[in-house]
Amino acid sequence: MENVARPWPALWSLVIGFFMILIDTTIVSVANPSIMEGLGTDINAVIWVTSAYLLAYAVPLLITGRLGDRFGPKKLYLSGLVVFTLASLWCGLAGDVQTLITARIFQGLGAAIMTPQTMAVITRIFPPDRRGAAMGLWGATAGLATLVGPILGGLLVDSLGWEWIFFINVPVGIVGFILAWRFVPTLSTHPHKFDIPGVLLSAVGLFLLVFGIQEGETYNWGTIVGPISVWGLIIAGVLVLGAFILWQRFNKGEPLLPLGLFRDRNFSLANIGITAVGFTVTAFALPLIFYYQLVRGMTPTESALMMVPMALISGGLAPVVGKIIDRVNPKYITAGGLVLMAVALFWNSAMMHPDTPILLFLLPSAVLGFANAGIWAPLSSTATRNLPPRQAGAGSGVYNTTRQIGAVLGSAAIAVLIQARLAEELPAQSPGADGMEFSGQLPEALHEGFSTAMGQSILLPAGVILVGAAVALFFAKPKAVAGWGSQPAAAAAAEGPTKAL
Image (cartoon, rainbow, N blue to C red; front, side, top):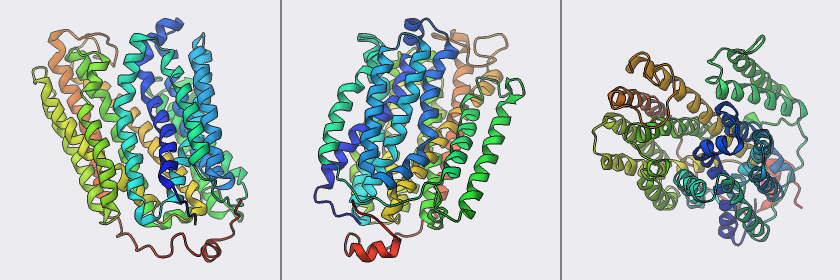
């Protein structure tokens, strides 16, 4: 167990890098038209600017989390930050789309190295019964990034050009590196044997699964090339991941993924919950933004500003909720937050008509702010409360992997549903009737059908988040904390061999 005299400066140093990673998952979508024009490419190529980043981010998380346990989260975090910052500079300097996609792969790898370390450090430097406030800040960062990404992207693209959505990461990365070097403690490491078969199986399985789901819509859920199909990749990914789990179960050495983590009921349920959250947060934004821009004629920046109540309330309340969950059973706050999110989405769905006063949409946006404040910190705190320090990285890797897989599933599912609802609600031969092939504001005659299709699509993430709320009700009451941070030798002996550097 680690005793750190000044954990808060360490956390603030990590939040800078975490915020930058989250920004980069959303900021590029605003710049896609400018990238297409600037690099003289097409929509299929520019989609890969985002897809390559998400793939490189999601696939290695299990591995990078374990690397943090082995070599120390500070070393891994700083290494990832260097890779991410240099890759950002490379992205901005790219002269063609192929170079940009390659640079985005390295950017995703840097993000994958960094992300599990932020959560692992929180788990190791804050006692379980005082971890809620720290997780509250972690959650507030996620909420604020959802607002800042699209708005900052719009402002940078409009004023300086698309390259600056990447260049801006360079000074932020340098400041983040200096602060993390100064304030993040060098924590004890643990002599893990690296599970090479597990690494290969997990990487191949996750790549096949994530690639298949993420790119399914691009290939109409059919053939990709020759005998290779989308569903073939997805099924192969599931089978390989099944083989990975079997290997972890019967591996006589030290597995990459300690399955014993899932004996903790709250860890298992929190992973289901964060998968539902990842799915919902990714899925609901797309139909809502389409409605704002194509029916109501808003610019990307204006539509992003409709999320201001959500971000401000979430950012302001998350630290408060974090302190509360250190004293009360977090399952009620988590379930309440997830139910509130469903209420806000059902409310949005009901209001999505061409003549609804646009300012009314700020009300469900505010409800989403209260919901977000009650979700991120309680879920992450519940997931990590019982993790032993030697498995903090592994647990963080699992948690962030399930969140990313939820996001990929949400992105793919909402795209399919939007297509289906547009085909049903719009007249044949109209823009978008056979899919999302439209640009600019729609003709007024199509507004009602398009709005109805978008409103119906939001019902899917609303239903998924209700499943998450039901799961949260089964959280076990947190156990009392005794002896955290004291008698390290006895604790180390109880948890297995450790090695302090």
